[in-house]
Image 1 (cartoon, rainbow, N blue to C red):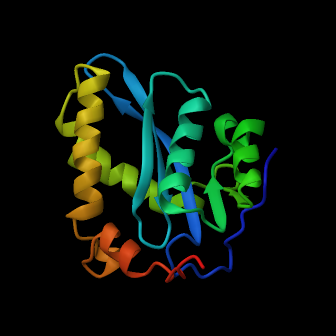
Image 2 (spheres, one colour):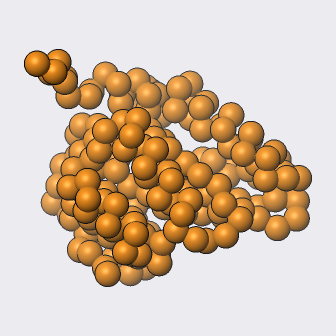
Length: 178
């Protein structure tokens, strides 16, 4: 099932308001693997990611579940209209968590522009500089880069701050349990 795009006139200013996910391919010396990342829209922080050598839904579900378990849940989750994200399993996970589902329009790459920006940075600053021999080597290289991206690399769109800094500094205060 396809859902409407929910942020046409929405101002997103705080972590965990909107998350987005997308899949890209990662070229290797021979062949390629698929990468899914879950990104917090306001901070640009990569919350979770997974590699897979197939385009099945399971690696997408694993990444989303990891992000929810570790970071709470967003109010809105945005994806493209790929079969992994429109599947009953994927949308069911979001619905079970009470998360509103948003989907890019057909052919509207700009609807998920922040994930597209991540892919460009990741590929030009890491992937294209290394011809990974194995999936394990790709995993290690991507882990190293995404840690750098979240914790060290300043972002112009974040006034020179890191995604981790913006995410942590702007989380709503949580009340202690009674």
